[in-house]
Image (cartoon, rainbow, N blue to C red; front, side, top):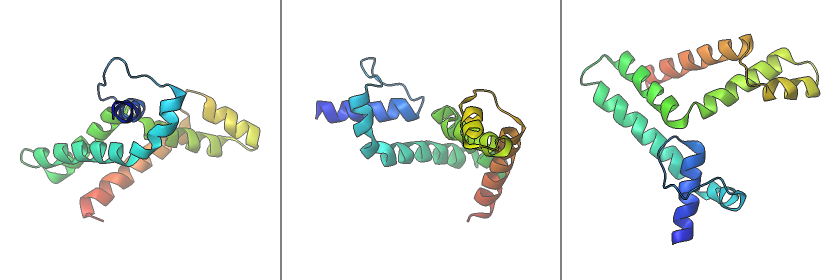
Length: 133
């Protein structure tokens, strides 16, 4: 049970900014086994984001509550998914060869394609959440 808890906290530490016990690290043995808890981590992030949305609807309009919940999910995950999406947009937008695409995707700076991709991603996400699809 203690080992499973350690594996769970490894997944939580890797995919979120939620504080974990000090003895948890990114040890490869635990990180490889942590994939079994990824859906749970998704439920935790989604649950917190929904809670922010739900509570915000009592104070703000639906649109503002959606934006606040999106901000909460970005803060909880440390923009993990958004960074990856921006890298893909930059890589495929600016690279013509496989090597160039991979080189661009490894670069930590965000380019025009990444920035435009993120703006459109957030716009799409807010519109879809607003109309309830």
